Length: 282
Image (cartoon, rainbow, N blue to C red; front, side, top):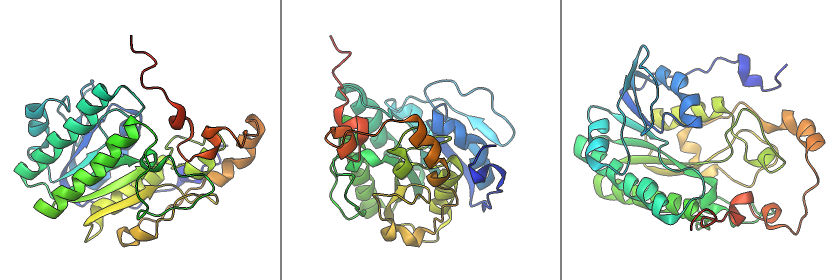
């Protein structure tokens, strides 16, 4: 029996928008959220530069490369909220990161401004703060310490979305997603794990809270071990229902005790602190 208690738990979600754009719909989290987010809106528009299959009931499909301003503009048109998961989600050469995660974010916010979209949920990352130590507990007020080009791009996204809130009034929740998988894969994820259902609960809270402003919230389930203090985001109303703790014994049984001097066990970013973006370059 799967110990994840959310498996048989109904998620109580309010329909808050007529049409939501989900970017990165072909990715791992996009695929997990696709059936869930349809409860938040009348129509869910799916976008990615890859195929997402045929539109089902309550869906639209509009493919777009984030580096293509015209395609992004068309994908945003007619939507009243955006859940932005699109872009590169691992470490990569800066040129690729720049096109998808930096230029692409500019295209998205410019399209939102032009079409009057006033609420965005931006998939930021725990790798914005990956060079804090696992012995520390931080809040959203701590300065960024990115662990990779990928983390740098997400730090840029947080600042860029803040500018579009201050200048144009586009509210954004920057969700620093931890490790969102069906279950924790290693000991680090006992602190960073975010269940798919809790991810949906968090995004739903960001979409429905009366006043979002520009908020940074850590995306984690109700884990006993945590490095992140979410007190600065209480106004969002996110209450996780799942926990990595039910997987603890199984994780310990299948993983070795980490070397406390190894950087991946010292810093919150784990393997990202040692990822080499130039490894596959000529």
